[in-house]
Image 1 (cartoon, rainbow, N blue to C red):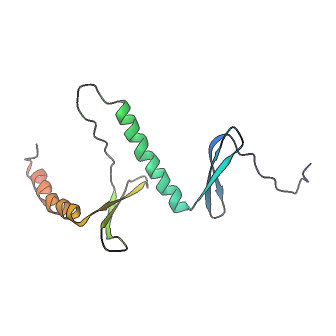
Image 2 (cartoon, one colour):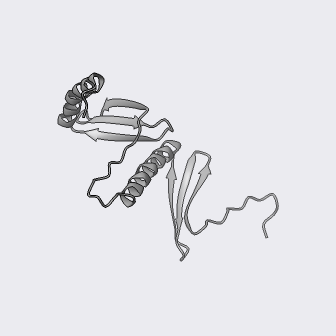
Amino acid sequence: MACPTEKTMPEIPLGISLVEQDNGFILRRKLANGEVTAINLTEEEFWGLRGAIVFWARRILSQRQAPSTGFKTIIVQSVARARVLPDAMRETVLLTIAASTGEQMTLEFPPHVAKFIADQVPGVLSEMSAGTWH
């Protein structure tokens, strides 16, 4: 029997669980045979995982709700902020987008794709402001 002043580890539940610790979080998966897999996450990694889960959840729901009319479902993520930087090796362009809720995702583009986007955006904005978008 544990002494009342002694801290005991809480029982890890079956399935997936997430617990906060002093310097981040622990994501655990416990199987019925008792095997436990643990992944330590920093707070930054936690928020990145949350954003990825929201993105994939929307995609899964959109695919399940897709009409059988032959139209392809487009998954949209509203963006409140964006940041563009080169990668550490200066070989690709990194675009970090953030939703107003704080969810973030970073996309990586080869230079030719980044240039294509940069060349296309002014024309699209011009058409939108002129009311000629169709």
